[in-house]
Each structure stands twice: as C-alpha cells, then as structure tokens.
Image (cartoon, rainbow, N blue to C red; front, side):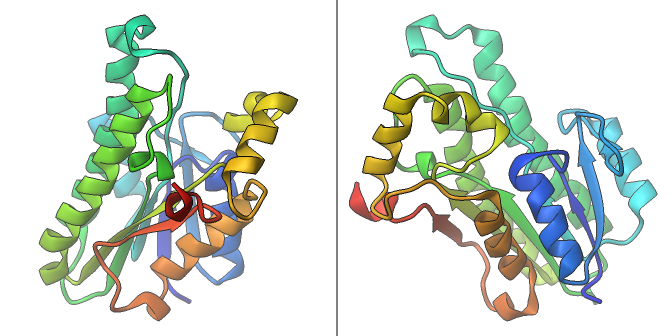
Length: 228
C-alpha cells in the first residue's frame, strides 16, 4: 500500500475523483471538504486550527493533495475586496497551511509527496477572473518554492495545472452553448477534460513513478498553454 493521503476538496469535482483514483491505486484516503458529504471529514482550509485537528486525526501521512479551491467571475473594477481576498485565502493560504502542516509532521526518514492544484490560467490570463488568475499564479510559485525547502526533508512538491474540466464549478459555463463552443475551440484537443483525467495525473505525481520529479507544474490542459 502506498500509504495514507489527505485530499482537500474531496466532496466533488476533481477532488472527489482523485479520492476514488487514489483509493483504487491502494492509497488509504482521508477526504476532506468544507462541504459536508458521506465519508468526507469537515475542513475549512483557511482555518489554521481546523488543519491542526485534521492532521492530528489523520495520523502519519505519506501524501497530501491540495485540491480545494474557489472561482468566481467578475471584472477587476466590479470585484469587491472581500472576494479578491477570499480567493487568496482559500486558494493560496489554504494550500500553504496544508504544505506547512504536512512538512511539520513529516518524518525525514520517510518519503512524502504533495500535489497542489493550480491552473492553466496561472500563466494564460483570461478576462473577468483576475482574482482567480492571481491566486493560481501564486499556487504555482508556492509549489516551486516549497519544493526547494521540502527536498531535504524527503518530500516532493508538484502541481497539476488543468485547463477546462467538467466539474460542478464549471457546470454553468459549460451549460452555455456559446461559452462551451469557445472553450472547445480554444483547446487544441477540441474538448474539455473529465475529472478522472486530472486525477490520474495527480496519482502519478504522488507515486514512486515520479520519484525524481519535484518543483514541477504539470500542465494538463489539452494543449491550451502551448497553443497560446
């Protein structure tokens, strides 16, 4: 068995699919989410004390997947400060608290791996989402910085950067024929991803098959970044 892994955002979308893929691969999965669901432990990733409780309850971990995140759409001039800061708190601070908690508890004699979920929009900006773009850019940068500090501790830190994925977060946009057609045309592969396709990449980055991979942001976007 690979070991125990904690997954945030595990109640739906990429997080839920990641929990399933990892469980099928032999991982002992601890799923967490701010949304209550069967088999999912409650966790507000912006709450430092809640992180401590989840880590203490989970016990020794071999892996961590920081998948929890939010995304709203509004122009810079129409975005309220609270919404901008909320994206930073959930997407960046939540990821940082997970990384810090994992590293503080990890025994250097054991191998460990962390996978963060960034986005193609960390590098490819889109209109009306500057707050989201900024937060995911920070996640990518945090991943690279954390990898440098974590390597001597025996922990690898990488990120997956998806393009458009069919999840509850994107359901409204993909339900609009005009927007769905725009996305299909924008992606060289001509379609959006399914959550399982992202989960499989996360599984790879956690696994021993990626034992010499750290500090990478692996774009899983159907060619979007290369086509920009």
